[in-house]
Image (cartoon, rainbow, N blue to C red; front, side, top):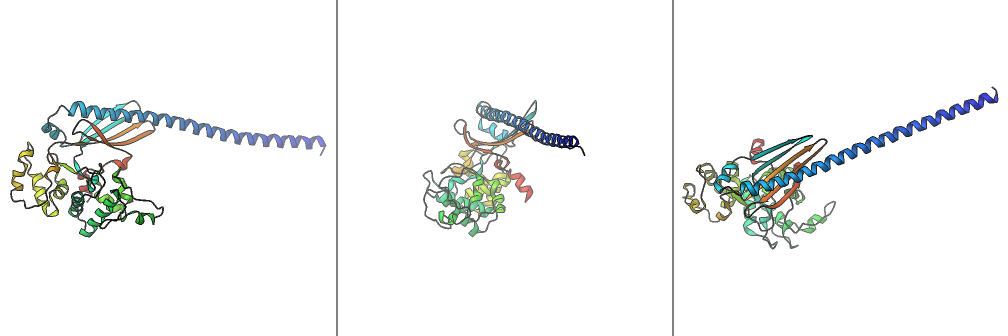
Length: 333
C-alpha cells in the first residue's frame, strides 16, 4: 500500500471518530435542552397553580365572611347538613373547593392546658373516645399518656407516658415536641403508634391549639358522631344516649337553653358531662382545595375558626392532610 493510501485511511478514520463524538455530544446537548425546557414548563405550571391556590384561599375567606356571616345559625346548620362544593373550570384546568362544618372532631390540643400542663378533662375524653371506638381500656390509656407527654411542656414522664428517653433510643433519635401538634399526621411519631391504629382514629381527630376543647355541633352531627358525643357526655356507657340525641334531633334543631330538658337526657345518669363542649351552630369550617393546571396539581386543606370573624387555624398540603369523612370511614369498616 502506498503511503498516500495509508494517510488517506487515517484521515478517514479520524474524521469518522470526530463525527461520532460530535453526534454523541449533540444528542447529550439536545437531551439537556429538552430537560431544561420541560423543567421550565413545569416550574411555570406550578407557579401558576400556586396562584390559583392563593385565589382559592381568598375565595374561601370571602365566602365565609360575606356569605356565611350574614346567615343566622339555623340557616348555617341547614346549609352544612352536607358539604358545599364549588367548581371553577378555567383554561388548562379546574379548581375544586369542598367546604364543610369542621365542628365535629376531637381536638388533640385539649390534652393539655394553654400553659402546656396536662389537662385531666381532655385526657379523660380522649380515652373515652378511644374506648368507644373499640380500643381496650389499657391501650386507650397508654396512648393518652404517650400523647399527653408528647404535647406537654415538661420532661417528666407521666402516667403511661413516654418522654425524651424513649424517643432518643430510636433510629434516628429525636425528642418529644413539647408543644401542640401541628398536624394530626404527627401522631405517627408517637411511641407505640402503628399505621393501622393511626388510620382507625384519624377521621375523628383534629389538631387545634393547646388548651382548646373539643366541640361538636349537635345540629349537624350524624349518627357516626355518637362516638365523640359519648366521650363528651362522660364515656362509652353513654353511647346509646348520644345516638338517641342525634337521631331524635327535631327538624329545627336543638337550642342551648333547652338542650338539657330533651327526652333523651331525662334519665341521664352521667356525672361528668361537658355540656359546654356542645355547639349549636358551626364554629369551625374545614376547606379542602384541589387545583389542576396543565401538568401541575396542588391539594391543600384549611381550617377556619368562624366564632369571631374568620381566623385561619390550620393549613396542610397534600392528600394526607385531607380529613376522611366519618361516613367514608364507616363504609370501610
